Amino acid sequence: MSMDMDFSVLAPEIVVLTGAVTALLAGSFSPRNKQWISRLIAALAVTVGAGFAVAGTLGKPETVFAGTFAVDTATGVARAIICVATLLVIALGGKELTGTSRESETYSLILLSALGAMVMSGTSDLLVLAVGYLLASIPLYALIGMGRSPHAAEAALKTYLLGAFFGIALMLGVAVLYALAGGSTYDALNTELTGAPAAATAVGLVGVLAGLAFKAGAVPGHFWIPDAAQGAGITAATFLTTVPKVGAIIAAYRLLSSIPDTVDWPLLIGLLSVASMTLGNFAAYFQTDVRRLLGWSTVSQAGYLLVPVAVAGHSTLALPSLLFYLAAYAVSNVGAFAVIAATGRYEVEDYRGLIRTAPWLAGALLISLLSLVGTPPTAVFVGKLTTFTAGWDGGLPWLVVLAALNTVVSLFYYLRWIAPAFARSPATPKTRAASDQASSARASSTRGGAASTAAIAGMAVLALGLSAGLLWPWLQGPLAR
Image 1 (tube, rainbow, N blue to C red):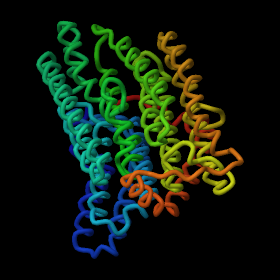
Image 2 (image 1 turned 180 degrees about the vertical axis):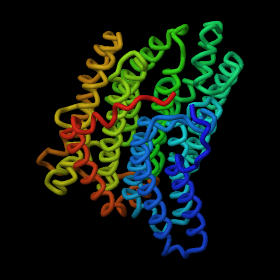
Image 3 (image 1 turned 90 degrees about the horizontal axis):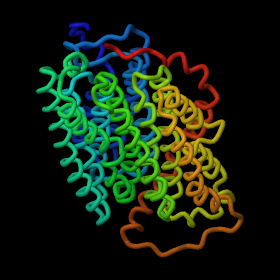
């Protein structure tokens, strides 16, 4: 453990925080037709943050600030994924937000929530974890409600209530574990919980994991995801289904790696994994709104991502496979949402004949959805293959079998979206409700930036899948202790 107080190790977080404040101030003193300055500042902040994040993975793993924050490969890769995904979200939603009354505030809130996810991914202290959770959560409530439609209001209220409930559960769990270990650092948990009552340790751990499940969109904290994905603007929907999940999953992995085996937490995580992927897949199968479909899809993806978390510390493949899967999921999910933003189509049948009217978007949609299924040679295929291998290697073959079966099930609802897009006949125009018409008008204005984002994400999906072997050694660094 290092007692070093060198703030340079927090360069990515400092840059993103500075960008959030600067974007807000710049927007406050700029006319509405020049709010692009805030967008440029936000994009620059996460770009520089990603560069610092990658550089941070090249040093020796260590914990800093009295053992409360870890600087290692997992932290660096998570930071990079969060920054790159946030950059893609900003690019996707630039036109949607241009000229709106809350443009600079939106960029600032996105950066602050991304900052919270970065803190969650690197923390090695329960108290800092709680702070990161709140920082990642509170901006989301405003982002979801900014649409000011009935659906947005309902989604914001549901997210707020669930966030408050699971936040209380997390802080209760933190208090219990703190009392049992006599300290809040993960190093203290690892050494002091060995002799603590197993039942009390389980109560504290369940509370913390409940809060992290909310941020990851996993069972039992998943209820807000589909409503938020449908009710929020497309920019906010893309962000909330992608970025917070990265921080929460890495935080869960790091925490569980420090919990002694007096509690059978692998079984608990395995059960949550199966529940998430099964519920998400079967609920998505009946959706006709593609935003809700992707909302339930992200619940199922949380289940797959929990497979390596369930074998944290029991398989050398667990951490690198998890990091790769998170990167693969991020670009695939952003790519699918970018197609929605570029087309302004929200119903599955509205995509009928997309291959004839917008072949590039149809191709990007095909790549993104096949990647979410786990089809070679896409990135998520490599992520699923390696995470399933890690689960088997870690002694949970039953979890791997159920995950593989769920992957087969998921193919059907993704094909329900792909098939109309590649049909020869065009879509039949449908009358939408006023709120949906407003959302469609906003989304149609995003087509330039969103189409480019969809193409970039599609290429990234294939590039990650094909270059996985080259990236793998970089992902294999140990956790800092």
